[in-house]
Structures are given as C-alpha cells and as structure tokens.
Amino acid sequence: MEILFEARTPLGIKVRTTEDYWNYLIEIKHPVMRGKEDLVHQILTDPDEIRRSTIDKDVYLYYKKIERLYCVVTKDLDEEGFIITAYPVDKIKEGSVVWKR
Image (cartoon, rainbow, N blue to C red; front, side, top):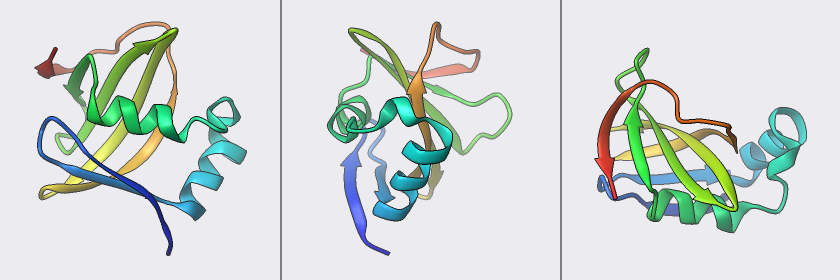
C-alpha cells in the first residue's frame, strides 16, 4: 500500500491515507474532493476546529473554512490514524469540541 500523504494534527496524531483509499474516496464516495489532496492536508494540519464523534470516541472531525466549510473525518489508533472521508459541509456537526483555533 503506497502512502499518498501523512499529516500531523494539532492533537499530535499522525494521520495518513493511501493512494488506493484516496482513489476510492474521490471516485465512489466524494468526487467533489478530486484534486483536493493539498486542501485535506491543510485541514488536518491547520483546522479551525476539531470535534470528537458522538458515536465513536476514536473518530475525529476536522473542520476548516477555505472558501467553503470542509470536514475531514479520521480514525485515531494510538497516536496514528487514517482518513475515513472528506467532504464539503453546510455546518459543523454535533460532537464535543476537543480543539479550537
């Protein structure tokens, strides 16, 4: 599995995604994110806000407004994590705030 990119978040978590998973994400789940790898990296390293999922304590939602509001969802596995999905959103979802600019 070829790593497409890694990013260190303000929480100290090293988040990664593979080329194969990114291709799945942009072809099947969210084609609107095609070509936005740099944007996703920026959201992870310099978010406006990070929230913890209300459903899974190991899932974090990173939000940043760059022309529009985006969310990158990650799963944390002991200081390392991976991207679950990334997409534009209309508003910030529920969840406890764990970090804010």
